[in-house]
Image (cartoon, rainbow, N blue to C red; front, side, top):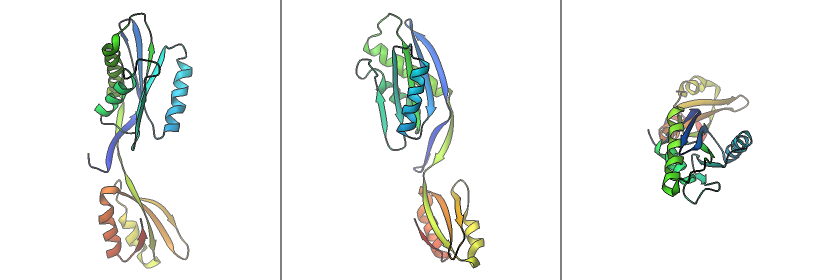
Length: 195
């Protein structure tokens, strides 16, 4: 994996297991924003309204959050987040739903149960490699249109938009690690641009 790529969840998964008479349900899914995560959490809480706890963690591209949701401090959210980080995922979330079965697990047992349930659900997900892109807006004179079209090289350089007027403008999305090289190429082709 390079600095401008990461692994994300392509298709979520669930894992249900019983630990010392408590039922644990790990639900792993892709998430692109906190708003999206909290909407999904609310849906899960409504669906499993009879559960004792809905503990969770998510990791976006630039930040991560977790919650013990009423379990003793540090016994649920952090172990779930540890499972996400252990799977080397970004844009990923896990909610672990627990139905208390009457046997206390202790802090170590709770931490293990939450981490193992989250890790088990994450082992079942399908993943996809994604890239961080930089956007370039390029002014293309009519006599250089063929040069502009040849710049596209998916998934490294994507032609994301075209507009034709007095000045034709093409929008390219370029992998962050290739942005400097792409800028040099535009200069060589004498195309004006802004990144």
